[in-house]
Image (tube, rainbow, N blue to C red; front, side, top):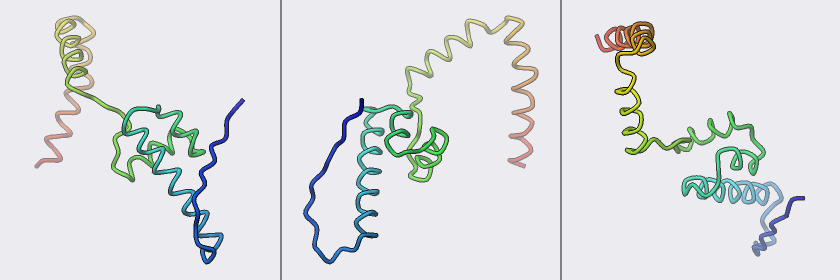
Length: 112
């Protein structure tokens, strides 16, 4: 069962229906974006509230220049630790050979 949130906001009689719908739409977007930026709602829930797929919500966030994920210093430390732990395993060597070398080659080509 879902709830319905009703916001009562007095507006002048002169505002036409199209503008009224735009105000409602923009208000919903701003509320969802603010809650998402504060990490109070998830990507999936933000998409659901705006009636978008997760992929379209990510595109919407990109247009607003809002990252859809947070990769902080703690994540970096954990990833670095994991890479160092597997550094000389066959899997690491395989990843380095088939993923990293082509990436490095591509970067060199684009910077020249």
